[in-house]
Length: 89
Image (cartoon, one colour):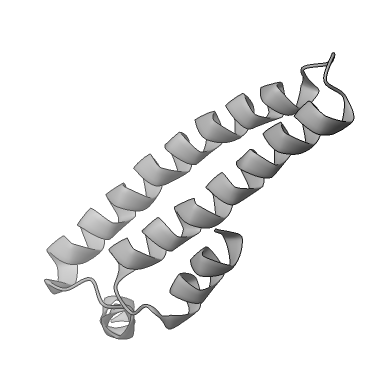
């Protein structure tokens, strides 16, 4: 799942698709926290707490990213990465 997210992040030109790919990467990391905690330290809950904290951070990051994408769409009418240079003017 991590490498699918990396591939999508590199190859996509749409900001929404890039955001979804970034979410795949972050979710893969959170799944690894939970799985490694379960198999290495089954009696402790640190990995689960890190996973819950990561989900909260991901939700906040998604809200901010969507606000930026909506603002970019309002300014230039398109959300392709190649058109973001128009916002510099």
